[in-house]
Image 1 (cartoon, rainbow, N blue to C red):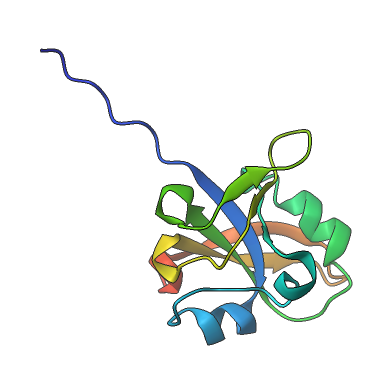
Image 2 (image 1 turned 90 degrees about the vertical axis):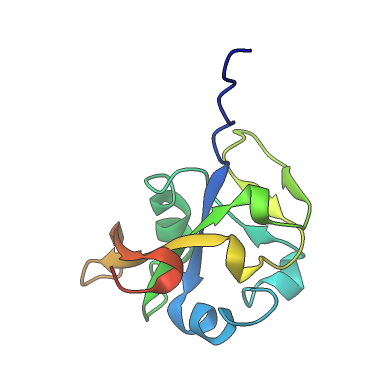
Amino acid sequence: MPDVPEPAPRHTFHLARSDEWQAQRHTSGYRPSAFAADGFVHCTDGLDRLLIPANAYFAAEPGPFVALEIDLDRVTAEVRYDADPPIYPHVYGPIEPAAVVATFAAERADDGTFTGFRREGPAGQPA
């Protein structure tokens, strides 16, 4: 019987305020402050693409941010792509910290523009 390759993991990214992630990373589920109003967690497929919503919605907000790399196969909440292009999944429930497989510190210019992400390590541990 031929070996059947395992399907590739489905990973997506969420931009989080560092203090919110740190406060919730040891809880049963991470919910960003916008979750109560939106009813879901905004995500983006592709770390490079995460710069688009980061700069569109958060460039004027001070403070450190991190990108959470989320393994969608470890998330128990419903995941839907509600808009085109299908690169922005919505997670309709909290994200289990065990589903966060790596974190990346957001790098920013002096004017607040997001310029990239630097890998911190697995689940927020320094590399």
